[in-house]
Image: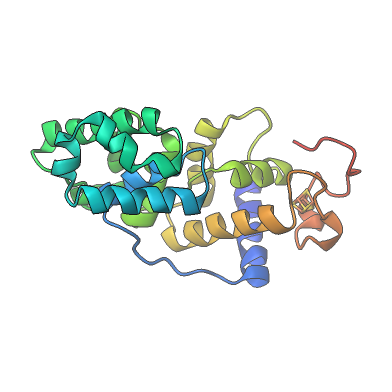
Length: 228
Ligand code: SF4
């Protein structure tokens, strides 16, 4: 663990030197972020953005969305794909929030320790570790690393995430590794994604152009070899 923590610090520093260090700024209110994250599952940012905009245009408040026919919600979000799955998921989640708190808001989570806020999010129907981490980090500004496909792949190749550790478990693992520095987590998250899209691609990673190649146990494997 100390070695992995030191490696995480090196990775954060070098990727920030390569790509810049993005500074955290608040995204949407927590409930908006939660719905947007559900809509983003298994589709592109553009499609999920259109679905979210259409949902808000047709149902300007979450109270109206919660009371609407499920079919009307599905129709509003159809540009985001899997609308018949996502519509009931969103409504169940809205109903649970209102039942627990009496309001359609999650911004009060900001005042809780990150672990407590995460537990409250994970207790909601349809909310898993990645969705919870997105809300915690992007909206509430709490230290939590969302593990998407790029973070998981690059993290495994670098040895930041142990082989065999699944995506869900990798959230808690990385949070323990990096510590409570919200801005470092934010920068590392965005830069791992950027690195995964441009250099450490799923197929044929460009190890010869990688600023981490001297610290990476997967460096310079042949492109015909299936990297983890
Ligand atoms: S050295 Fe290669 S496998 Fe390792 S992080 Fe860089 S691109 Fe990915």
